[in-house]
Amino acid sequence: MKNAPVRHRLELGGYLAVKALLRGLPHAGSRACGASLGGILHRLDARHRRVVEHNLRLAFPALDDDDRAALARRAFRHTGATFADAISIQRFDRAELCRRVDVSGWEVLRDAEAMGRGVLVMGAHLGNWEVVALTVGALHGPLQAVGRPADNPWMDRELQRLRTRFGNVSLAKHGSVRRMLRVLKEEGRVGMLIDQRVKPHEGIAVPFFGTPCWTSPLLARLALRTGAPIVPAFGDHLPDGRYAMRFLTPLVPEGSENDETVLALTERCLEVVAEAIRLRPESWFWLHERWKGFA
Image 1 (tube, rainbow, N blue to C red):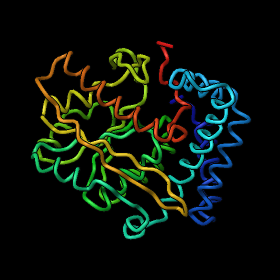
Image 2 (image 1 turned 90 degrees about the horizontal axis):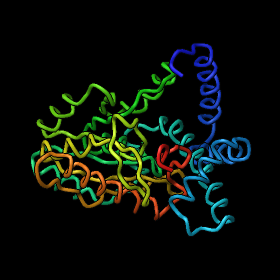
Image 3 (image 1 turned 180 degrees about the vertical axis):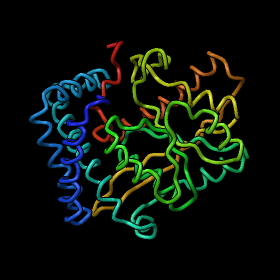
Image 4 (image 1 turned 45 degrees about the vertical axis):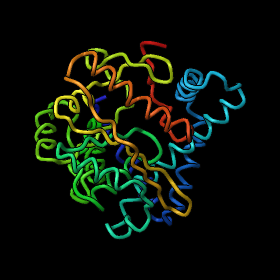
């Protein structure tokens, strides 16, 4: 809801109260507090609980009811922990953040950059996605990350403070294509999350866990138009307030840009995301109605 000033102020007040609480705790304690809040949300928010359980049935039909319910609880707790972590992580300067992140696959990113066509860093709402962009910016150089602004303008300012740290740039999802093409032409890095539903007129129907869903073709179109490789990158929590981050084998675009190649490349991208989710299914953002309109 975009034009709701009273609601927006209440949301900001609640956020600032939680932020003050979490910043008063050790970083690992903030994450644990967030997990507890996620557990409370699981018990109280019946609507999102139904969304999560519906999504899990589509993605993991072989799970029995008890296992599915247990996975749903863990997913809520992980979502709460990630929310709290995104607030708490802002206390770290560049050096402290770098000390806390274990990165594997830097050579993958460097080799992709050596192609001289820019790089598209593909992420998902999996694990801790904010730490990926922050780590790239802190350790390697600016990442221009594409995202949807928050409806609440005050909350959006808070979000932008997080996303523009360490030289990173936040690009609006709409109206920034020319900017993205220019960044790639200058051999820069564009970051994009591919796993959220888009409106039907903005997307293409692509299978995800075997069920079609509306997905943005923008990542594939940029890759096919410029020749820029797509480097999957995922981050997640480790114990004691640390993080793991990994770059995976690049997806190199093949052929010219047309409907068939865009669909095929987008499907390959979602297959990579699905495989990463299967490794730690509780760490994906299941509260989103990903398959709305199809299932």
